[in-house]
Length: 191
Image (cartoon, rainbow, N blue to C red; front, side, top):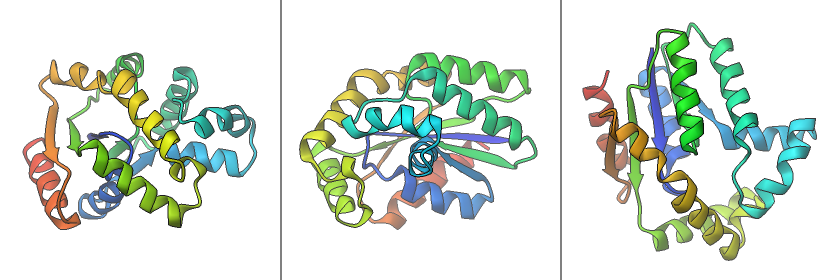
């Protein structure tokens, strides 16, 4: 089973590229952000507990996110592969994810980091916010807070996979096709 982590700051294009990679390689795409937003929309207990974190741009608590991923892996044991978009976001999540995969005889194949400068990220998210209706995409202050939290708490996860030789950075600036081709080249060498 091919397990790919898409990694990068909010607005780097993880979701856009994951949808294309899903099609090309016939693998599943799990976006923790979409799962959480879906729970919020349905007003489930998980959604209600997560709403305040999302609104302020904060990260979801590890235990909730890890539980979601573990459930997902259990339900998709027969998949050809998975793209994890927005997970893991902390070193604790990465370590637990490695244990969950190892228990099934699996591991992460590669972490693809999409490198995009901060000003470009802000511009992209504000543009997305005009269409998405997401409150966390409409405020530059919230966007910059999300990026700052990413830099403080999430960026260090890359070190975890770099130590395992599974981290590869790609230039996330360019046309969608250019970025897609860069990502495919990485995936093809880690299959």
